[in-house]
Length: 88
Image 1: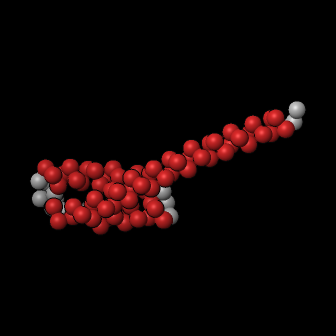
Image 2 (image 1 turned 30 degrees about the vertical axis):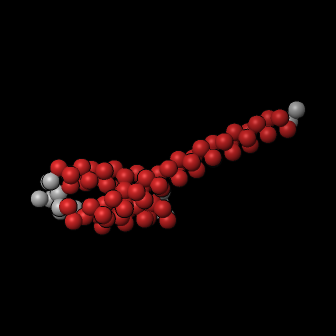
C-alpha cells in the first residue's frame, strides 16, 4: 500500500489560500488523485482527512483565483473603454 500525501496536499492547499493561488490547482489535482487511490484501496487511508482538507482549500483558492482573473479582465475592459470614450 502506498503512503498518502495528505500533509503535502494540505500544505499546498493552505499556501494557495495565503501566498500562491496557483498551488491550489496542484492541491486540487493531487488531492483528487490520492482520494481515488484511497477509495481503490491502493493508498494508506489514514490520510483521507488531510487530503480532503487540502483538496478543499485548493478548490477554494482556484475559484478565488478565477474570480480575480475575471475581475481583472473586466476592470481592464472598463479602463480601455474609458480611455477610448474619454478622448472623443
